[in-house]
Length: 493
Image (cartoon, rainbow, N blue to C red):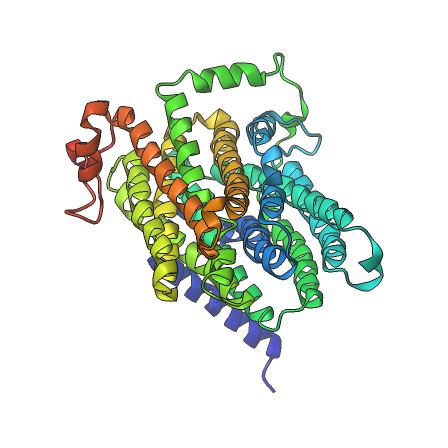
C-alpha cells in the first residue's frame, strides 16, 4: 500500500513549484523575488491586502447597495457611514511614523500594529450584523428605533475602516522593509495587485453567495468575513519581521514626528504632488458608493449582478496596474502615468452617463471597467512617485502620507457623492426626469475633478498653464503611444 503522507508531500512540492513558475512568468512584479525574499514569502505577506480588499468590497460594494436599495436607507446617510473611516485616514501618517520608531521588548516594529488593526477589523464585523438586523426590522431587534441600527452600522464601519487603515499602512511598510531599496516600489506594487485580486475574488464570491438574497444570508457573509480576516492577517505576518533586540532600547534622542514631517514636506513639489493625488482620488472616488445603486435603480441590476460590478471595476484596476508596471519599468515618469489615468477616466465616466439614456447595460459595464483602468494607472503612478521620494528610514511615514491623502480624498469624495445625489434627488432638477439625473450630476463633477487634476499636474512636468490644452491633448496614452508629453514621457527631475 503506498505511503499516503509521502504522496501528499510530493504533490504539495510539485504544486508549489508549479505555482512559483507560473508566478514568475505571469504575475506582475514577480521578478522582485530573490533567494533572500522568495516569491512564496511575498505572496503570503500579501494576504493582508486580500483581507483589506475583502473589507472594501463588503462595505463599498455589497452593503452600500443593500442599505440604499433593499433597506431604503438614504444614500447620503450610507455615504457618510462608508466615509467614516476617513476620520482615521489622516492618522495613517502618524501610524506609519510610529511603526518606523516603535520600541518593543519583543524586538518588533510592525507586527504589533498589524495585530491591533486586525482586532479592530474583527470588532467592526462583529457589531455589523446586529446593526443590520435593526435596520431590517427583523428578529427581537425589530422593536428598536431605526437610529440605533444606523448608529451601530456607523460604529462598525468606523472600526473596520480604522483597522484596515492600520493594517494596510504598516503592512506595506513591512513589505518594503524586507526588500532592497531599488525593489521597494515593485514590492509595494505587488501588494496592490494582490489588493485588487482580493477585491475581485471577494466580489465574485459575495455575488455568488447572495444570488438568493436574504438579510440572514448577508449576516452569514459578514460573520465569515470576520473569521477570514483574522486567518489571513495572522498568516500574512507569521515569521515575517525579524526580531531585533536593539529595538527594545530607547535611543539617546527620540525622533519626533514634527521633524520627520518637516523634512518630508519641504521636498521639491511635495505639496503639489499631494494636491494632485487628492484631486485625482476624489475624482475617481465620488462614484464608489453610487455605481451599484445606479445599476440597480436605473438599469435594473439585481444584488448579485451589482456586486459582480465591483469585480469588473477591480479587474480594470488590475489591468491598469499591470500596464503601468510594464511602462514604468522602462523609465516612464510616474506622474505622467497618473495623468494618463485621469485622461482614461474622463471618457469612462462619459460612457457611464450615456448608459442611462441609451438603456445600455453593456456601455455601463464597459465604462465601469475603464474607470478601474484609469484608477489603476493613477494609483500606481502616484504610489511610485511617492516611493521614489521616500528615505528608507521614513518609509512607513511616507507610505502613510500617500495613504492618508488618498483615503481622505476617497472618503470625502464618497460622502460628497452621496450628499450631492440626495440633494439633486429632492431638487427641481430631478422632478419628472427619472432616477438617473442625480447620479449623472455626480459623474459630471467627477469629470471636472479629473480635469482639475490634470491642470494641477502641469507644473510637475515644467509646462506653463498657457500650454495646458496642448499638453493634455498630447498626453493620451491610447493615441499615438503612451509617450505623449514633451520629452517622450521620461522621468523628470
